[in-house]
Length: 603
Image (cartoon, rainbow, N blue to C red; front, side):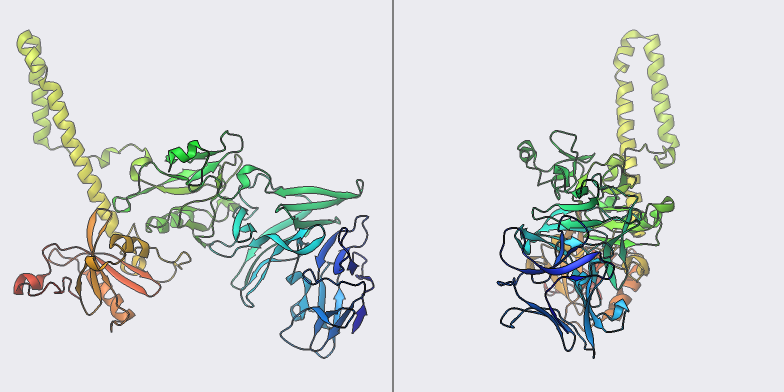
């Protein structure tokens, strides 16, 4: 089937395909545009990187089902592709604006050999899917024109990024992200002050094991299109019959706070403030001098550092655009309380939130790195809970949490107070001397109470540690429904980066022994000395033996046995983390130390 390139119209007369020259260019391109509007608006270009230099060309369908564009010398300048062949392939322009290649008589979309909707240029038409097909590995994304006269791919691209929580549409300039839409909250993109919901269209993000994509459809008979402009602006246009022109409905980005991570980690942008960047509550600028120079890229840090071993808390932050979700994990069935429990058990989990705001909220979304690209959004309904140091909770200590004062101490205090009071009344001179006894006694008592409170908090922290409240990390897409250290053995799972930092990246000067399991390293984790047994890749111990050791040591806690603090499972790395024994192991105590390379922890 060959088609000399005269204009071809779709069956309903909505779209037209033919040769065109953009602007003042003399080069010729095969394109698709709206048929029945006064302004020619091209929505797709076939040979955007291979223009025809003459006015003639032929579109031809050849076996096994390819649509090819031939120039005046019958040279192929553009072609479709296909992974299978049919006996009678044809090309057809649909009323949706989709150019398809298919077997004649077969109208099943899943059987199409090729379609232009899978290869867009700068325009997303209603019904198109912007995203990824995980079966074929194909990504559908938009790319801007170079300029008004050159439809070749320009600097900007528009993607639906499947990494982390996939409901995240991003605009890139080259490889750099310049704008990020908000996570999909079940109704809309949360925290998007510049996007508007319309009565004439509906849109959403859809995710499954097979694909993830953003799409929209029109509810009424209107003409609308979404494009990425040459200067990197995402524009949603509608056609105005009265104006006989295109009317902008949504423009993104449209202000400073739309710039990706303008205020750095934990920085919050507010376009109504001057300067626009500030830190979230209980955070301070990482570099005050840079902030004075309006360089906010360094972001903010917690004014009180985290201490997972002591027990952190989560504070609620409202009316903000949720952070970048590309380094995140999600579960659609968890409750918010279950989400909190998972995040609490993971020292690398920085924040959590509901996934879906409908019906009171459901699902779980976890963040595992610094929180980026936050802005103030007054009407935002979705809350986020950020990990903070326990001292930042600001709550009063309940009476049940206070240490119990012994009867002897209480009577002693009462007697001193009574004596001091009576003496002061009966003898002025002696009262002046004893005047200092009262505040001194109170001061000593407060010191004792403070020590007891610290002891109680330390004890609670250790109890939380035993319950596995801290830990459970590893891959950002870790499946928490599968077994791991925290769930199967009720001990924490540490992040590989934390253990590497604690052992100076497994430095040789930190190595204190070797065993059948592998090398043993000494380290310091949040002020506590630890011993790390790292499974050697040449070790004969497999996954079963590794799990058995974790199980037995975790269950058989005893004052004469080394205590296991947690484990690390990340990729091929398997490690056990014990408390460090400064006096060596039991065998060295009984039999003596004969070599510095003696085993320091029993397998």
